[in-house]
Image (cartoon, rainbow, N blue to C red; front, side, top):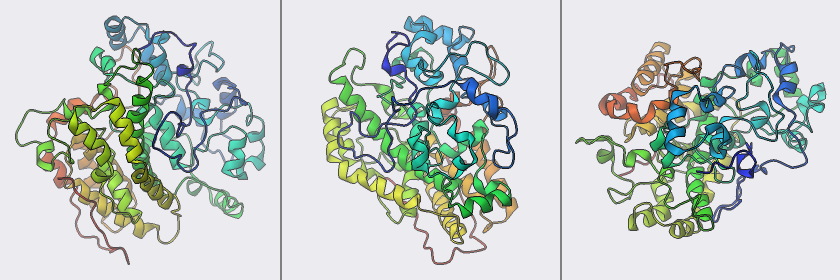
Length: 504
Protein backbone atom coordinates (compact mmCIF):
# COMPACT_ATOMS: atom_id res chain seq x y z
CA UNK A 1 0.00 0.00 0.00
CA UNK A 2 1.44 3.30 -1.08
CA UNK A 3 1.46 6.38 1.15
CA UNK A 4 2.80 8.80 -1.40
CA UNK A 5 -0.06 11.24 -0.93
CA UNK A 6 -2.52 12.70 -3.39
CA UNK A 7 -0.20 13.74 -6.18
CA UNK A 8 -0.05 10.52 -8.18
CA UNK A 9 -2.49 9.51 -10.93
CA UNK A 10 -3.81 6.56 -8.93
CA UNK A 11 -5.61 8.96 -6.61
CA UNK A 12 -7.85 10.34 -9.32
CA UNK A 13 -11.42 9.36 -8.53
CA UNK A 14 -12.26 8.14 -12.03
CA UNK A 15 -15.86 7.85 -12.96
CA UNK A 16 -16.25 5.20 -15.64
CA UNK A 17 -14.20 1.99 -15.68
CA UNK A 18 -11.72 1.81 -18.53
CA UNK A 19 -12.70 -1.36 -20.33
CA UNK A 20 -9.61 -2.84 -21.86
CA UNK A 21 -6.74 -0.74 -20.49
CA UNK A 22 -4.04 -3.06 -19.27
CA UNK A 23 -6.36 -6.05 -19.58
CA UNK A 24 -5.57 -8.94 -21.84
CA UNK A 25 -8.20 -11.23 -23.24
CA UNK A 26 -11.19 -8.94 -22.79
CA UNK A 27 -12.94 -6.90 -25.45
CA UNK A 28 -14.49 -3.55 -24.64
CA UNK A 29 -18.10 -3.80 -23.54
CA UNK A 30 -20.94 -1.92 -25.25
CA UNK A 31 -20.93 1.81 -24.51
CA UNK A 32 -17.47 1.68 -22.93
CA UNK A 33 -16.14 5.16 -22.19
CA UNK A 34 -12.67 6.47 -21.32
CA UNK A 35 -11.87 7.26 -17.70
CA UNK A 36 -12.11 11.02 -18.06
CA UNK A 37 -11.26 13.21 -20.99
CA UNK A 38 -8.58 15.80 -20.24
CA UNK A 39 -10.72 18.21 -22.25
CA UNK A 40 -13.05 18.58 -19.25
CA UNK A 41 -12.23 20.06 -15.84
CA UNK A 42 -13.84 19.49 -12.47
CA UNK A 43 -15.81 22.52 -11.33
CA UNK A 44 -16.52 21.54 -7.72
CA UNK A 45 -19.52 20.34 -5.76
CA UNK A 46 -20.29 23.84 -4.50
CA UNK A 47 -21.24 24.80 -8.07
CA UNK A 48 -23.70 21.91 -8.26
CA UNK A 49 -25.21 22.62 -4.87
CA UNK A 50 -26.09 26.22 -5.76
CA UNK A 51 -28.94 24.94 -7.93
CA UNK A 52 -29.58 21.40 -6.80
CA UNK A 53 -30.23 22.30 -3.18
CA UNK A 54 -33.72 23.54 -4.04
CA UNK A 55 -36.86 22.41 -5.86
CA UNK A 56 -36.67 22.91 -9.60
CA UNK A 57 -40.12 22.49 -11.05
CA UNK A 58 -41.77 19.46 -12.62
CA UNK A 59 -38.67 17.94 -14.14
CA UNK A 60 -36.33 17.99 -11.13
CA UNK A 61 -39.06 17.83 -8.52
CA UNK A 62 -36.88 16.53 -5.69
CA UNK A 63 -34.17 18.59 -4.06
CA UNK A 64 -31.12 16.55 -5.06
CA UNK A 65 -28.84 17.47 -2.20
CA UNK A 66 -31.51 16.82 0.43
CA UNK A 67 -30.84 13.11 -0.23
CA UNK A 68 -27.19 13.20 -1.30
CA UNK A 69 -25.96 15.11 1.76
CA UNK A 70 -27.07 12.25 4.04
CA UNK A 71 -25.81 9.27 2.09
CA UNK A 72 -22.66 7.22 2.52
CA UNK A 73 -20.95 8.81 -0.47
CA UNK A 74 -20.98 12.42 0.63
CA UNK A 75 -19.76 11.31 4.07
CA UNK A 76 -17.24 8.70 2.93
CA UNK A 77 -14.37 11.01 3.88
CA UNK A 78 -15.32 10.54 7.54
CA UNK A 79 -13.61 7.15 7.33
CA UNK A 80 -10.30 8.99 6.93
CA UNK A 81 -10.82 11.12 10.04
CA UNK A 82 -8.41 10.68 12.97
CA UNK A 83 -11.53 10.87 15.17
CA UNK A 84 -12.50 7.45 13.80
CA UNK A 85 -11.26 4.76 16.19
CA UNK A 86 -10.95 2.12 13.47
CA UNK A 87 -8.96 4.53 11.30
CA UNK A 88 -6.52 5.29 14.11
CA UNK A 89 -5.94 1.57 14.63
CA UNK A 90 -5.34 1.01 10.91
CA UNK A 91 -2.97 3.96 10.69
CA UNK A 92 -0.93 2.62 13.58
CA UNK A 93 -0.83 -0.91 12.16
CA UNK A 94 0.11 0.19 8.63
CA UNK A 95 2.29 3.20 9.49
CA UNK A 96 0.23 5.61 7.36
CA UNK A 97 -2.00 8.65 7.54
CA UNK A 98 -5.26 7.67 5.88
CA UNK A 99 -6.05 11.20 4.67
CA UNK A 100 -2.69 11.29 2.87
CA UNK A 101 -2.68 7.75 1.46
CA UNK A 102 -3.51 7.28 -2.21
CA UNK A 103 -5.32 3.97 -1.88
CA UNK A 104 -7.56 5.36 0.90
CA UNK A 105 -8.31 8.62 -0.85
CA UNK A 106 -9.20 6.91 -4.12
CA UNK A 107 -12.52 5.59 -2.78
CA UNK A 108 -13.26 7.83 0.18
CA UNK A 109 -13.16 11.34 -1.23
CA UNK A 110 -13.20 13.35 -4.43
CA UNK A 111 -10.43 13.82 -6.94
CA UNK A 112 -7.45 16.02 -6.19
CA UNK A 113 -8.27 17.79 -9.45
CA UNK A 114 -11.51 19.08 -7.96
CA UNK A 115 -11.52 22.45 -6.19
CA UNK A 116 -11.30 21.79 -2.44
CA UNK A 117 -14.23 22.34 -0.11
CA UNK A 118 -13.03 25.03 2.24
CA UNK A 119 -15.84 24.62 4.75
CA UNK A 120 -18.47 21.92 5.08
CA UNK A 121 -22.10 22.93 5.54
CA UNK A 122 -25.36 21.05 6.05
CA UNK A 123 -25.56 20.51 2.27
CA UNK A 124 -21.89 20.39 1.31
CA UNK A 125 -19.56 17.56 2.32
CA UNK A 126 -16.05 16.56 1.30
CA UNK A 127 -16.72 12.93 0.44
CA UNK A 128 -17.55 11.46 -2.96
CA UNK A 129 -18.68 14.41 -5.04
CA UNK A 130 -21.29 14.99 -7.75
CA UNK A 131 -18.64 15.02 -10.47
CA UNK A 132 -17.04 11.82 -9.17
CA UNK A 133 -20.04 9.99 -10.57
CA UNK A 134 -21.53 12.35 -13.15
CA UNK A 135 -18.34 13.51 -14.84
CA UNK A 136 -16.18 16.63 -14.88
CA UNK A 137 -18.58 19.53 -15.33
CA UNK A 138 -16.73 22.17 -17.32
CA UNK A 139 -18.33 21.02 -20.58
CA UNK A 140 -21.91 20.52 -19.45
CA UNK A 141 -22.32 22.93 -16.52
CA UNK A 142 -23.90 25.73 -18.55
CA UNK A 143 -25.57 23.70 -21.34
CA UNK A 144 -27.41 21.48 -18.87
CA UNK A 145 -29.19 24.53 -17.46
CA UNK A 146 -31.17 24.80 -20.70
CA UNK A 147 -34.45 22.93 -21.15
CA UNK A 148 -33.25 21.58 -24.49
CA UNK A 149 -30.57 19.62 -22.63
CA UNK A 150 -33.15 17.21 -21.26
CA UNK A 151 -33.88 15.65 -24.62
CA UNK A 152 -30.37 15.33 -25.98
CA UNK A 153 -29.30 11.75 -26.63
CA UNK A 154 -26.95 10.03 -24.21
CA UNK A 155 -24.16 10.23 -26.80
CA UNK A 156 -24.67 13.98 -27.18
CA UNK A 157 -24.50 14.48 -23.42
CA UNK A 158 -21.38 12.37 -23.15
CA UNK A 159 -19.76 14.62 -25.74
CA UNK A 160 -20.06 17.38 -23.14
CA UNK A 161 -18.40 15.18 -20.50
CA UNK A 162 -21.49 13.97 -18.64
CA UNK A 163 -21.57 10.26 -17.84
CA UNK A 164 -24.64 8.28 -18.76
CA UNK A 165 -25.63 6.81 -15.41
CA UNK A 166 -29.06 5.95 -16.81
CA UNK A 167 -27.20 3.20 -18.66
CA UNK A 168 -27.11 0.28 -16.18
CA UNK A 169 -23.83 -0.95 -17.68
CA UNK A 170 -22.04 2.35 -17.10
CA UNK A 171 -23.65 2.71 -13.68
CA UNK A 172 -22.57 -0.78 -12.58
CA UNK A 173 -19.02 -0.21 -13.80
CA UNK A 174 -18.88 3.11 -12.00
CA UNK A 175 -20.09 1.65 -8.70
CA UNK A 176 -17.94 -1.47 -8.90
CA UNK A 177 -14.76 0.55 -9.37
CA UNK A 178 -14.94 1.12 -5.60
CA UNK A 179 -17.33 -1.57 -4.36
CA UNK A 180 -15.29 -4.33 -6.00
CA UNK A 181 -12.01 -2.61 -6.92
CA UNK A 182 -10.16 -1.23 -9.91
CA UNK A 183 -6.45 -1.44 -10.61
CA UNK A 184 -6.23 1.45 -13.08
CA UNK A 185 -7.34 4.03 -10.50
CA UNK A 186 -5.58 2.55 -7.47
CA UNK A 187 -8.83 1.40 -5.91
CA UNK A 188 -7.49 -1.78 -4.40
CA UNK A 189 -8.23 -2.92 -0.87
CA UNK A 190 -5.43 -5.25 0.11
CA UNK A 191 -5.44 -8.18 2.50
CA UNK A 192 -2.98 -6.17 4.59
CA UNK A 193 -5.61 -3.45 4.94
CA UNK A 194 -8.19 -6.03 5.97
CA UNK A 195 -5.80 -7.46 8.55
CA UNK A 196 -5.27 -3.95 9.92
CA UNK A 197 -9.02 -3.50 10.42
CA UNK A 198 -10.64 -2.38 7.17
CA UNK A 199 -14.11 -3.99 7.04
CA UNK A 200 -14.54 -6.53 4.25
CA UNK A 201 -16.41 -5.29 1.21
CA UNK A 202 -19.89 -6.79 1.14
CA UNK A 203 -21.49 -8.40 -1.87
CA UNK A 204 -22.73 -5.51 -3.99
CA UNK A 205 -26.16 -5.37 -5.62
CA UNK A 206 -26.51 -2.15 -7.55
CA UNK A 207 -30.21 -1.42 -7.16
CA UNK A 208 -30.39 -2.32 -3.47
CA UNK A 209 -27.41 -0.10 -2.68
CA UNK A 210 -28.89 2.71 -4.79
CA UNK A 211 -32.09 2.52 -2.79
CA UNK A 212 -30.19 2.20 0.47
CA UNK A 213 -28.17 5.34 -0.08
CA UNK A 214 -31.35 7.33 -0.72
CA UNK A 215 -31.98 8.02 -4.43
CA UNK A 216 -31.53 11.66 -5.38
CA UNK A 217 -33.36 11.25 -8.68
CA UNK A 218 -36.68 10.12 -10.13
CA UNK A 219 -37.04 7.98 -13.18
CA UNK A 220 -39.27 9.18 -16.00
CA UNK A 221 -42.12 6.81 -15.13
CA UNK A 222 -42.07 8.15 -11.56
CA UNK A 223 -42.56 11.74 -12.69
CA UNK A 224 -45.83 13.53 -13.46
CA UNK A 225 -47.97 12.50 -16.47
CA UNK A 226 -47.06 15.79 -18.11
CA UNK A 227 -43.33 15.01 -17.95
CA UNK A 228 -43.89 11.42 -19.07
CA UNK A 229 -45.72 12.67 -22.16
CA UNK A 230 -42.97 15.18 -22.99
CA UNK A 231 -40.37 12.45 -22.61
CA UNK A 232 -42.29 10.03 -24.83
CA UNK A 233 -42.74 12.65 -27.55
CA UNK A 234 -39.00 13.39 -27.49
CA UNK A 235 -38.06 9.65 -27.44
CA UNK A 236 -36.21 10.40 -24.22
CA UNK A 237 -33.93 7.53 -23.19
CA UNK A 238 -34.19 6.34 -19.61
CA UNK A 239 -32.38 3.73 -17.56
CA UNK A 240 -33.66 0.27 -18.23
CA UNK A 241 -37.07 -1.20 -17.85
CA UNK A 242 -37.14 -1.78 -14.10
CA UNK A 243 -35.11 -2.29 -10.96
CA UNK A 244 -35.01 -6.04 -11.56
CA UNK A 245 -33.66 -5.62 -15.10
CA UNK A 246 -30.88 -3.36 -13.87
CA UNK A 247 -30.14 -5.81 -11.09
CA UNK A 248 -29.63 -8.61 -13.63
CA UNK A 249 -27.40 -6.41 -15.78
CA UNK A 250 -25.43 -5.41 -12.69
CA UNK A 251 -24.78 -9.07 -11.81
CA UNK A 252 -23.41 -9.78 -15.27
CA UNK A 253 -21.15 -6.73 -15.16
CA UNK A 254 -19.96 -7.75 -11.69
CA UNK A 255 -19.18 -11.27 -12.91
CA UNK A 256 -17.07 -9.87 -15.73
CA UNK A 257 -15.32 -7.36 -13.47
CA UNK A 258 -14.33 -9.98 -10.86
CA UNK A 259 -12.28 -11.76 -13.51
CA UNK A 260 -11.01 -8.50 -14.97
CA UNK A 261 -9.81 -7.29 -11.56
CA UNK A 262 -7.61 -10.35 -11.04
CA UNK A 263 -6.38 -10.16 -14.63
CA UNK A 264 -5.50 -6.47 -14.35
CA UNK A 265 -3.69 -7.03 -11.07
CA UNK A 266 -1.77 -9.93 -12.62
CA UNK A 267 -0.66 -7.57 -15.37
CA UNK A 268 0.63 -4.80 -13.09
CA UNK A 269 2.40 -7.11 -10.66
CA UNK A 270 4.68 -8.14 -13.52
CA UNK A 271 6.27 -4.68 -13.59
CA UNK A 272 5.51 -3.46 -10.07
CA UNK A 273 5.95 -6.39 -7.69
CA UNK A 274 6.94 -4.10 -4.80
CA UNK A 275 3.65 -2.18 -4.61
CA UNK A 276 1.58 -5.01 -6.11
CA UNK A 277 2.96 -8.27 -4.68
CA UNK A 278 1.57 -11.61 -5.81
CA UNK A 279 -0.71 -13.08 -4.74
CA UNK A 280 -3.05 -10.39 -3.41
CA UNK A 281 -5.37 -12.47 -1.25
CA UNK A 282 -8.08 -9.80 -1.09
CA UNK A 283 -8.90 -10.37 -4.78
CA UNK A 284 -10.38 -13.78 -4.01
CA UNK A 285 -13.44 -15.12 -2.21
CA UNK A 286 -12.95 -14.24 1.46
CA UNK A 287 -15.17 -17.05 2.70
CA UNK A 288 -13.00 -19.64 0.98
CA UNK A 289 -10.71 -19.23 4.00
CA UNK A 290 -12.86 -17.37 6.52
CA UNK A 291 -15.73 -19.80 6.93
CA UNK A 292 -17.43 -21.78 9.66
CA UNK A 293 -15.73 -25.00 10.73
CA UNK A 294 -18.85 -27.09 10.85
CA UNK A 295 -20.37 -30.12 9.15
CA UNK A 296 -22.64 -29.86 7.28
CA UNK A 297 -21.89 -26.44 5.83
CA UNK A 298 -23.25 -24.30 2.99
CA UNK A 299 -20.07 -24.71 0.97
CA UNK A 300 -19.69 -28.47 1.30
CA UNK A 301 -23.31 -29.15 0.44
CA UNK A 302 -23.31 -27.37 -2.93
CA UNK A 303 -19.76 -28.26 -3.95
CA UNK A 304 -16.91 -26.10 -5.12
CA UNK A 305 -17.75 -25.23 -8.69
CA UNK A 306 -15.10 -27.48 -10.30
CA UNK A 307 -12.44 -26.26 -7.89
CA UNK A 308 -10.35 -28.66 -5.85
CA UNK A 309 -11.55 -28.37 -2.23
CA UNK A 310 -9.29 -25.98 -0.37
CA UNK A 311 -8.50 -23.83 -3.40
CA UNK A 312 -9.71 -20.22 -3.00
CA UNK A 313 -11.85 -19.13 -5.93
CA UNK A 314 -12.41 -15.81 -7.61
CA UNK A 315 -15.13 -13.71 -5.97
CA UNK A 316 -18.27 -15.87 -5.91
CA UNK A 317 -21.19 -13.60 -5.05
CA UNK A 318 -22.20 -12.46 -8.59
CA UNK A 319 -22.45 -15.97 -10.00
CA UNK A 320 -25.90 -17.17 -8.94
CA UNK A 321 -27.69 -14.02 -10.04
CA UNK A 322 -25.59 -13.89 -13.21
CA UNK A 323 -26.83 -17.42 -14.04
CA UNK A 324 -30.39 -16.15 -13.69
CA UNK A 325 -29.54 -13.21 -15.95
CA UNK A 326 -28.16 -15.58 -18.61
CA UNK A 327 -31.34 -17.64 -18.48
CA UNK A 328 -33.51 -14.56 -18.70
CA UNK A 329 -31.55 -13.46 -21.76
CA UNK A 330 -32.19 -16.82 -23.40
CA UNK A 331 -28.62 -18.03 -22.79
CA UNK A 332 -28.76 -20.73 -20.06
CA UNK A 333 -24.99 -20.76 -19.57
CA UNK A 334 -23.22 -22.67 -16.81
CA UNK A 335 -21.25 -19.93 -15.05
CA UNK A 336 -18.78 -22.39 -13.55
CA UNK A 337 -18.01 -23.67 -17.06
CA UNK A 338 -17.54 -20.08 -18.18
CA UNK A 339 -14.85 -19.65 -15.52
CA UNK A 340 -13.14 -22.97 -16.33
CA UNK A 341 -9.88 -21.38 -17.66
CA UNK A 342 -9.41 -19.61 -14.31
CA UNK A 343 -10.41 -22.70 -12.32
CA UNK A 344 -7.78 -24.80 -14.08
CA UNK A 345 -5.05 -22.36 -13.03
CA UNK A 346 -6.33 -22.13 -9.44
CA UNK A 347 -6.50 -25.94 -9.18
CA UNK A 348 -2.81 -26.28 -10.02
CA UNK A 349 -1.73 -23.94 -7.25
CA UNK A 350 -3.60 -21.98 -4.54
CA UNK A 351 -4.32 -18.46 -5.87
CA UNK A 352 -2.68 -19.43 -9.16
CA UNK A 353 0.19 -17.51 -10.70
CA UNK A 354 0.10 -14.10 -12.31
CA UNK A 355 1.20 -15.49 -15.66
CA UNK A 356 -1.24 -18.38 -15.45
CA UNK A 357 -4.20 -16.08 -14.80
CA UNK A 358 -3.19 -13.79 -17.65
CA UNK A 359 -3.23 -16.82 -19.93
CA UNK A 360 -6.61 -17.84 -18.48
CA UNK A 361 -7.98 -14.43 -19.40
CA UNK A 362 -6.75 -14.91 -22.97
CA UNK A 363 -8.25 -18.41 -23.13
CA UNK A 364 -11.56 -17.22 -21.69
CA UNK A 365 -12.00 -14.16 -23.91
CA UNK A 366 -14.44 -15.85 -26.29
CA UNK A 367 -16.47 -17.25 -23.42
CA UNK A 368 -16.67 -13.87 -21.72
CA UNK A 369 -18.08 -12.35 -24.90
CA UNK A 370 -21.24 -14.25 -23.94
CA UNK A 371 -21.59 -11.96 -20.94
CA UNK A 372 -21.70 -8.95 -23.25
CA UNK A 373 -24.28 -10.70 -25.44
CA UNK A 374 -26.51 -11.34 -22.44
CA UNK A 375 -26.12 -7.73 -21.28
CA UNK A 376 -27.09 -6.51 -24.74
CA UNK A 377 -30.29 -8.56 -24.66
CA UNK A 378 -31.31 -7.38 -21.20
CA UNK A 379 -30.63 -3.72 -21.88
CA UNK A 380 -33.10 -3.85 -24.76
CA UNK A 381 -35.94 -4.53 -22.35
CA UNK A 382 -38.67 -1.90 -22.52
CA UNK A 383 -41.46 -0.87 -20.20
CA UNK A 384 -44.13 -2.42 -22.39
CA UNK A 385 -46.98 -4.87 -21.96
CA UNK A 386 -44.58 -7.82 -21.71
CA UNK A 387 -42.63 -6.46 -18.74
CA UNK A 388 -44.82 -8.07 -16.07
CA UNK A 389 -44.48 -11.53 -17.62
CA UNK A 390 -40.73 -11.20 -18.02
CA UNK A 391 -40.29 -10.06 -14.44
CA UNK A 392 -42.48 -12.86 -13.15
CA UNK A 393 -40.30 -15.40 -14.95
CA UNK A 394 -37.11 -13.80 -13.62
CA UNK A 395 -38.51 -13.69 -10.09
CA UNK A 396 -39.35 -17.40 -10.27
CA UNK A 397 -35.83 -18.19 -11.49
CA UNK A 398 -34.26 -16.16 -8.69
CA UNK A 399 -36.34 -18.00 -6.11
CA UNK A 400 -35.24 -21.35 -7.58
CA UNK A 401 -31.59 -20.28 -7.38
CA UNK A 402 -32.08 -19.19 -3.78
CA UNK A 403 -33.42 -22.59 -2.78
CA UNK A 404 -30.06 -24.11 -3.76
CA UNK A 405 -27.75 -21.28 -2.70
CA UNK A 406 -24.42 -22.23 -1.15
CA UNK A 407 -22.94 -19.16 0.53
CA UNK A 408 -24.13 -16.17 2.52
CA UNK A 409 -23.12 -13.41 0.11
CA UNK A 410 -24.69 -15.13 -2.91
CA UNK A 411 -27.88 -15.61 -0.88
CA UNK A 412 -27.84 -11.91 -0.05
CA UNK A 413 -27.49 -10.89 -3.70
CA UNK A 414 -30.33 -13.19 -4.74
CA UNK A 415 -32.51 -11.94 -1.90
CA UNK A 416 -32.04 -8.31 -2.88
CA UNK A 417 -32.93 -9.17 -6.48
CA UNK A 418 -35.94 -11.17 -5.35
CA UNK A 419 -37.25 -8.21 -3.38
CA UNK A 420 -37.09 -6.11 -6.58
CA UNK A 421 -39.13 -8.74 -8.39
CA UNK A 422 -41.67 -9.27 -5.60
CA UNK A 423 -42.23 -5.56 -5.14
CA UNK A 424 -44.16 -5.41 -8.43
CA UNK A 425 -45.17 -9.05 -8.96
CA UNK A 426 -48.96 -9.04 -8.63
CA UNK A 427 -48.98 -12.70 -9.68
CA UNK A 428 -48.63 -13.42 -5.96
CA UNK A 429 -50.72 -11.98 -3.09
CA UNK A 430 -49.45 -8.74 -1.59
CA UNK A 431 -49.39 -10.07 1.99
CA UNK A 432 -47.31 -13.09 0.93
CA UNK A 433 -44.83 -10.88 -0.90
CA UNK A 434 -44.51 -8.52 2.06
CA UNK A 435 -43.93 -11.40 4.47
CA UNK A 436 -41.34 -12.95 2.16
CA UNK A 437 -39.42 -9.69 1.81
CA UNK A 438 -39.48 -9.15 5.58
CA UNK A 439 -38.25 -12.69 6.27
CA UNK A 440 -35.36 -12.47 3.80
CA UNK A 441 -34.41 -9.06 5.15
CA UNK A 442 -34.26 -10.43 8.68
CA UNK A 443 -32.31 -13.60 7.82
CA UNK A 444 -29.78 -11.96 5.50
CA UNK A 445 -29.54 -8.44 6.98
CA UNK A 446 -30.70 -6.72 3.81
CA UNK A 447 -31.51 -3.39 5.42
CA UNK A 448 -29.35 -0.28 5.42
CA UNK A 449 -28.83 1.88 8.52
CA UNK A 450 -29.82 5.53 8.63
CA UNK A 451 -27.67 7.50 8.37
CA UNK A 452 -25.82 5.17 6.01
CA UNK A 453 -22.49 6.32 7.38
CA UNK A 454 -22.53 6.95 11.16
CA UNK A 455 -20.67 10.10 12.13
CA UNK A 456 -17.64 9.37 14.35
CA UNK A 457 -17.46 8.64 17.22
CA UNK A 458 -20.91 7.02 16.88
CA UNK A 459 -20.96 3.41 18.18
CA UNK A 460 -23.30 2.38 15.33
CA UNK A 461 -21.78 -0.16 12.94
CA UNK A 462 -21.84 0.67 9.24
CA UNK A 463 -23.80 -1.76 7.09
CA UNK A 464 -20.75 -3.08 5.26
CA UNK A 465 -19.23 -4.41 8.47
CA UNK A 466 -21.75 -7.20 8.74
CA UNK A 467 -20.97 -9.51 5.81
CA UNK A 468 -18.36 -11.95 7.15
CA UNK A 469 -19.43 -11.56 10.76
CA UNK A 470 -23.05 -12.46 9.96
CA UNK A 471 -22.32 -15.45 7.74
CA UNK A 472 -21.49 -17.99 10.49
CA UNK A 473 -24.80 -17.30 12.25
CA UNK A 474 -26.99 -17.67 9.16
CA UNK A 475 -29.35 -20.65 9.17
CA UNK A 476 -29.03 -22.20 5.70
CA UNK A 477 -32.21 -24.25 6.02
CA UNK A 478 -34.29 -21.21 6.94
CA UNK A 479 -32.65 -19.08 4.26
CA UNK A 480 -33.40 -21.60 1.54
CA UNK A 481 -36.95 -22.07 2.76
CA UNK A 482 -37.45 -18.31 2.67
CA UNK A 483 -36.85 -18.44 -1.10
CA UNK A 484 -39.80 -20.79 -1.62
CA UNK A 485 -42.65 -19.21 -3.57
CA UNK A 486 -46.14 -20.68 -3.93
CA UNK A 487 -47.44 -21.21 -7.46
CA UNK A 488 -48.23 -17.93 -9.13
CA UNK A 489 -51.92 -17.06 -9.25
CA UNK A 490 -51.35 -15.53 -12.69
CA UNK A 491 -48.98 -17.75 -14.70
CA UNK A 492 -46.76 -15.82 -17.08
CA UNK A 493 -48.06 -16.55 -20.61
CA UNK A 494 -45.67 -18.10 -23.07
CA UNK A 495 -42.63 -18.14 -20.77
CA UNK A 496 -41.10 -21.40 -19.66
CA UNK A 497 -39.36 -20.98 -16.32
CA UNK A 498 -36.08 -22.91 -16.32
CA UNK A 499 -34.04 -22.69 -13.10
CA UNK A 500 -30.43 -21.63 -13.58
CA UNK A 501 -27.76 -24.37 -13.45
CA UNK A 502 -26.76 -25.48 -9.95
CA UNK A 503 -23.02 -25.95 -9.31
CA UNK A 504 -21.97 -29.35 -7.98
